[in-house]
Length: 265
Image: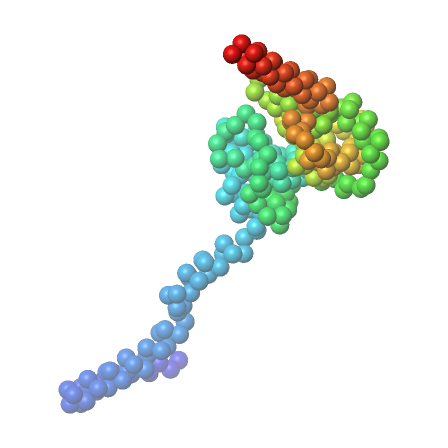
Protein backbone atom coordinates (compact mmCIF):
# COMPACT_ATOMS: atom_id res chain seq x y z
CA UNK A 1 0.00 0.00 0.00
CA UNK A 2 1.40 3.39 -0.96
CA UNK A 3 2.04 5.80 1.85
CA UNK A 4 0.22 9.12 1.57
CA UNK A 5 2.37 12.04 0.65
CA UNK A 6 2.71 14.64 3.36
CA UNK A 7 3.64 18.17 2.45
CA UNK A 8 6.75 19.26 4.35
CA UNK A 9 9.05 22.23 4.32
CA UNK A 10 12.51 21.41 3.09
CA UNK A 11 15.14 22.12 5.72
CA UNK A 12 17.57 23.57 3.19
CA UNK A 13 15.24 26.41 2.31
CA UNK A 14 16.02 29.93 3.36
CA UNK A 15 14.08 30.89 6.57
CA UNK A 16 12.04 33.56 4.74
CA UNK A 17 11.20 31.15 1.93
CA UNK A 18 10.22 28.49 4.51
CA UNK A 19 7.89 30.94 6.27
CA UNK A 20 6.24 31.85 2.98
CA UNK A 21 5.71 28.20 2.07
CA UNK A 22 4.19 27.47 5.52
CA UNK A 23 1.79 30.37 5.21
CA UNK A 24 0.73 29.18 1.79
CA UNK A 25 0.01 25.73 3.18
CA UNK A 26 -2.15 27.19 6.01
CA UNK A 27 -4.13 29.36 3.61
CA UNK A 28 -4.65 26.43 1.29
CA UNK A 29 -5.95 24.26 4.12
CA UNK A 30 -8.24 26.94 5.55
CA UNK A 31 -11.18 26.61 3.14
CA UNK A 32 -11.03 22.83 3.41
CA UNK A 33 -11.36 22.97 7.20
CA UNK A 34 -14.26 25.44 7.15
CA UNK A 35 -16.20 23.81 4.36
CA UNK A 36 -17.80 20.98 6.40
CA UNK A 37 -18.63 23.35 9.28
CA UNK A 38 -21.83 25.41 9.85
CA UNK A 39 -22.09 29.16 10.02
CA UNK A 40 -22.40 30.38 13.64
CA UNK A 41 -25.57 32.29 12.73
CA UNK A 42 -27.37 29.19 11.42
CA UNK A 43 -28.39 27.61 14.82
CA UNK A 44 -29.99 30.89 15.93
CA UNK A 45 -31.93 31.09 12.69
CA UNK A 46 -33.21 27.54 13.11
CA UNK A 47 -34.21 28.20 16.73
CA UNK A 48 -36.05 31.37 15.75
CA UNK A 49 -37.99 29.56 13.05
CA UNK A 50 -39.19 26.81 15.40
CA UNK A 51 -41.81 28.82 17.37
CA UNK A 52 -43.23 30.21 14.14
CA UNK A 53 -44.06 26.69 13.02
CA UNK A 54 -45.93 25.86 16.26
CA UNK A 55 -49.70 25.52 16.24
CA UNK A 56 -51.56 28.78 16.92
CA UNK A 57 -54.10 27.20 19.25
CA UNK A 58 -51.35 25.55 21.29
CA UNK A 59 -49.50 28.85 21.69
CA UNK A 60 -52.61 30.74 22.78
CA UNK A 61 -53.64 28.02 25.21
CA UNK A 62 -50.21 27.82 26.86
CA UNK A 63 -50.02 31.61 27.14
CA UNK A 64 -53.52 32.37 28.40
CA UNK A 65 -55.19 29.18 29.69
CA UNK A 66 -52.69 26.58 30.89
CA UNK A 67 -51.87 28.39 34.15
CA UNK A 68 -55.43 27.73 35.39
CA UNK A 69 -56.61 24.69 33.43
CA UNK A 70 -53.35 22.73 33.11
CA UNK A 71 -51.16 22.18 30.06
CA UNK A 72 -53.33 19.27 28.91
CA UNK A 73 -56.62 20.62 30.18
CA UNK A 74 -56.56 18.41 33.25
CA UNK A 75 -57.38 21.30 35.59
CA UNK A 76 -55.40 22.88 38.41
CA UNK A 77 -55.93 24.62 41.71
CA UNK A 78 -57.08 27.81 39.99
CA UNK A 79 -59.36 26.29 37.39
CA UNK A 80 -61.40 23.19 36.50
CA UNK A 81 -60.64 20.58 33.89
CA UNK A 82 -61.70 21.39 30.35
CA UNK A 83 -61.39 17.85 29.04
CA UNK A 84 -64.67 16.85 27.44
CA UNK A 85 -66.46 20.18 27.91
CA UNK A 86 -67.07 20.38 24.18
CA UNK A 87 -66.52 23.06 21.53
CA UNK A 88 -69.79 24.87 22.36
CA UNK A 89 -68.68 25.56 25.94
CA UNK A 90 -65.25 26.86 24.91
CA UNK A 91 -66.70 29.04 22.16
CA UNK A 92 -69.35 30.46 24.52
CA UNK A 93 -66.84 31.40 27.23
CA UNK A 94 -64.40 33.00 24.78
CA UNK A 95 -66.87 34.73 22.43
CA UNK A 96 -68.72 36.38 25.35
CA UNK A 97 -65.46 37.61 26.90
CA UNK A 98 -65.97 35.61 30.08
CA UNK A 99 -62.62 33.89 29.58
CA UNK A 100 -59.77 34.32 30.14
CA UNK A 101 -59.90 36.06 33.54
CA UNK A 102 -57.04 37.82 35.30
CA UNK A 103 -58.01 36.52 38.76
CA UNK A 104 -60.30 33.96 40.33
CA UNK A 105 -63.97 35.00 40.39
CA UNK A 106 -67.17 33.28 41.48
CA UNK A 107 -68.98 34.12 38.26
CA UNK A 108 -67.31 35.50 35.16
CA UNK A 109 -69.24 38.41 33.64
CA UNK A 110 -69.75 39.23 30.00
CA UNK A 111 -67.24 41.55 28.36
CA UNK A 112 -65.44 42.28 25.12
CA UNK A 113 -63.79 39.18 23.65
CA UNK A 114 -60.04 39.07 24.16
CA UNK A 115 -59.39 37.00 21.03
CA UNK A 116 -60.32 37.39 17.39
CA UNK A 117 -62.72 34.96 15.74
CA UNK A 118 -59.80 33.09 14.17
CA UNK A 119 -57.98 32.75 17.48
CA UNK A 120 -61.15 31.55 19.19
CA UNK A 121 -61.57 28.88 16.52
CA UNK A 122 -57.94 27.79 17.04
CA UNK A 123 -58.44 27.55 20.80
CA UNK A 124 -61.66 25.58 20.37
CA UNK A 125 -59.85 23.06 18.17
CA UNK A 126 -56.93 22.78 20.60
CA UNK A 127 -59.14 22.12 23.64
CA UNK A 128 -61.10 19.58 21.60
CA UNK A 129 -57.82 17.72 20.98
CA UNK A 130 -57.69 16.88 24.71
CA UNK A 131 -60.42 14.31 24.09
CA UNK A 132 -63.90 13.69 25.43
CA UNK A 133 -67.24 14.61 23.96
CA UNK A 134 -69.35 17.63 24.77
CA UNK A 135 -71.82 19.65 22.69
CA UNK A 136 -70.75 20.92 19.31
CA UNK A 137 -71.24 24.55 18.29
CA UNK A 138 -74.89 24.67 17.17
CA UNK A 139 -76.03 25.86 13.78
CA UNK A 140 -78.97 28.18 14.38
CA UNK A 141 -81.70 28.60 11.77
CA UNK A 142 -84.60 31.10 11.72
CA UNK A 143 -87.26 30.19 14.26
CA UNK A 144 -90.88 30.84 15.17
CA UNK A 145 -91.39 33.83 17.50
CA UNK A 146 -94.66 32.55 18.96
CA UNK A 147 -93.15 29.23 19.96
CA UNK A 148 -90.01 30.97 21.18
CA UNK A 149 -92.05 33.26 23.43
CA UNK A 150 -93.72 30.28 25.09
CA UNK A 151 -90.41 28.46 25.60
CA UNK A 152 -88.81 31.59 27.04
CA UNK A 153 -91.69 32.22 29.44
CA UNK A 154 -91.59 28.64 30.71
CA UNK A 155 -87.83 28.11 31.00
CA UNK A 156 -85.95 31.44 30.96
CA UNK A 157 -88.14 34.25 32.31
CA UNK A 158 -88.13 32.97 35.95
CA UNK A 159 -84.41 33.85 36.15
CA UNK A 160 -83.68 36.28 33.32
CA UNK A 161 -86.92 38.24 33.66
CA UNK A 162 -89.84 38.55 31.30
CA UNK A 163 -87.94 41.08 29.18
CA UNK A 164 -84.53 39.41 29.37
CA UNK A 165 -83.10 42.18 31.57
CA UNK A 166 -81.55 39.70 34.04
CA UNK A 167 -81.96 39.43 37.79
CA UNK A 168 -80.07 38.70 41.00
CA UNK A 169 -80.09 35.10 42.19
CA UNK A 170 -78.67 33.67 45.44
CA UNK A 171 -75.21 33.83 47.05
CA UNK A 172 -73.96 36.59 44.78
CA UNK A 173 -74.90 34.88 41.51
CA UNK A 174 -76.86 36.68 38.80
CA UNK A 175 -78.85 35.71 35.74
CA UNK A 176 -77.25 38.08 33.21
CA UNK A 177 -79.17 40.25 30.76
CA UNK A 178 -79.61 38.71 27.32
CA UNK A 179 -79.62 41.81 25.14
CA UNK A 180 -76.06 41.37 23.85
CA UNK A 181 -76.37 37.64 23.18
CA UNK A 182 -76.16 36.41 19.62
CA UNK A 183 -78.38 33.59 18.38
CA UNK A 184 -75.46 31.13 18.50
CA UNK A 185 -74.56 32.15 22.06
CA UNK A 186 -78.17 31.61 23.16
CA UNK A 187 -78.14 28.12 21.65
CA UNK A 188 -74.75 27.35 23.22
CA UNK A 189 -75.94 28.42 26.67
CA UNK A 190 -78.98 26.16 26.33
CA UNK A 191 -76.79 23.16 25.54
CA UNK A 192 -73.93 23.70 28.04
CA UNK A 193 -75.66 25.46 30.97
CA UNK A 194 -73.06 28.02 32.07
CA UNK A 195 -72.97 29.01 35.75
CA UNK A 196 -76.15 28.06 37.60
CA UNK A 197 -78.12 27.68 34.40
CA UNK A 198 -79.42 24.13 33.87
CA UNK A 199 -78.46 22.14 30.79
CA UNK A 200 -81.24 21.57 28.25
CA UNK A 201 -80.31 18.50 26.17
CA UNK A 202 -82.01 17.70 22.89
CA UNK A 203 -84.39 15.37 24.73
CA UNK A 204 -85.80 18.41 26.55
CA UNK A 205 -85.49 21.08 23.86
CA UNK A 206 -84.85 19.88 20.33
CA UNK A 207 -82.97 21.91 17.72
CA UNK A 208 -86.16 23.42 16.30
CA UNK A 209 -87.22 24.67 19.72
CA UNK A 210 -83.75 26.09 20.33
CA UNK A 211 -84.04 27.96 17.03
CA UNK A 212 -87.41 29.36 18.15
CA UNK A 213 -85.97 30.44 21.50
CA UNK A 214 -82.94 32.11 19.90
CA UNK A 215 -85.20 34.00 17.51
CA UNK A 216 -87.33 35.32 20.39
CA UNK A 217 -84.27 36.44 22.38
CA UNK A 218 -83.12 38.34 19.31
CA UNK A 219 -86.51 40.05 19.24
CA UNK A 220 -86.04 41.09 22.87
CA UNK A 221 -82.65 42.42 21.91
CA UNK A 222 -84.25 44.55 19.20
CA UNK A 223 -86.88 45.88 21.60
CA UNK A 224 -84.33 46.97 24.20
CA UNK A 225 -84.61 50.63 23.27
CA UNK A 226 -88.15 51.80 23.98
CA UNK A 227 -89.90 54.43 21.88
CA UNK A 228 -90.72 57.53 23.92
CA UNK A 229 -90.45 58.11 27.67
CA UNK A 230 -88.11 56.56 30.20
CA UNK A 231 -88.13 52.74 30.17
CA UNK A 232 -87.41 52.67 33.95
CA UNK A 233 -85.31 49.55 33.55
CA UNK A 234 -88.14 47.75 31.71
CA UNK A 235 -89.87 46.91 34.99
CA UNK A 236 -93.22 46.38 33.31
CA UNK A 237 -96.40 48.48 32.92
CA UNK A 238 -97.65 47.96 36.49
CA UNK A 239 -94.45 49.12 38.17
CA UNK A 240 -93.96 51.96 35.70
CA UNK A 241 -97.55 53.14 36.23
CA UNK A 242 -97.05 53.09 40.00
CA UNK A 243 -93.93 55.23 39.68
CA UNK A 244 -95.87 57.69 37.50
CA UNK A 245 -98.70 57.95 40.09
CA UNK A 246 -96.23 58.53 42.92
CA UNK A 247 -94.50 61.27 40.95
CA UNK A 248 -97.83 62.97 40.17
CA UNK A 249 -98.95 62.70 43.81
CA UNK A 250 -95.72 64.32 44.97
CA UNK A 251 -96.26 67.20 42.59
CA UNK A 252 -99.85 67.68 43.82
CA UNK A 253 -98.75 67.75 47.49
CA UNK A 254 -96.03 70.27 46.69
CA UNK A 255 -98.48 72.47 44.81
CA UNK A 256 -101.05 72.33 47.65
CA UNK A 257 -98.45 73.34 50.24
CA UNK A 258 -97.26 76.20 48.07
CA UNK A 259 -100.82 77.48 47.58
CA UNK A 260 -101.50 77.20 51.36
CA UNK A 261 -98.38 79.18 52.13
CA UNK A 262 -99.40 81.89 49.69
CA UNK A 263 -102.90 82.08 51.18
CA UNK A 264 -101.46 82.45 54.71
CA UNK A 265 -99.32 85.36 53.60
